[in-house]
Length: 78
Image (cartoon, rainbow, N blue to C red; front, side, top):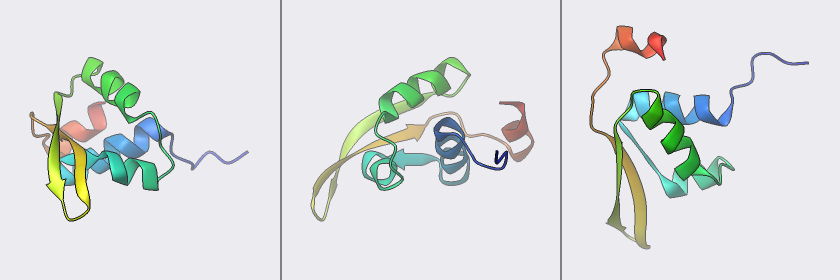
């Protein structure tokens, strides 16, 4: 059994901590289909993720952005 694998929640959390946001299309590329449920979990853990549609070259994408920037030392608390 591998213990170095990240859960879907961990992958999303890491991406948001690094980039400040995550798109629905990025999550789908990572084979994560329930992004809304993960966002809900993270909001309950102290994140403040707000979503909105943004135009892209192929139409629209739904982006969740963290409205509370995390400091590097806070990343380990969650």
